[in-house]
Image (cartoon, rainbow, N blue to C red; front, side):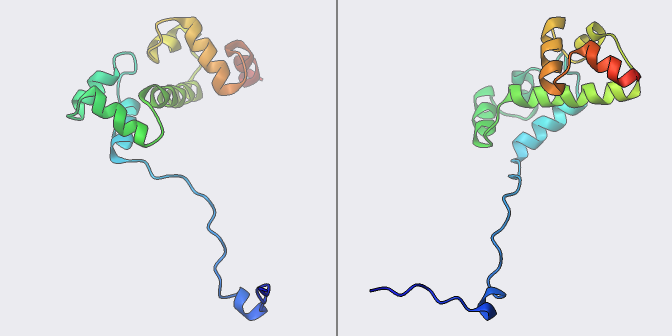
Length: 131
């Protein structure tokens, strides 16, 4: 019959606590895609042109991003959100101007994304910021 492990208070100090789960490090490819998106014209950047600028095929780019549990569309959405926050901190812009600047073909697509990012409609957000 097995005996339960003996607990010794002196040993408890020697055993390191379990590590807290942290963020996974991004691969070089994912990091480079984010850099390109954050520094580029979001209205013109497409996955195939980003892949070409990195010297790889679109298929290879998709595979490498998938290895990081992400995809081009997700990274593009995060870049748009970041750029939107930056622009709105500087000055307020009409939704259709901001949608065009962020690369949305339809203004309503921008408004839906904005609600997803903030939980507020664009007009509700403006009212809260102007108070």
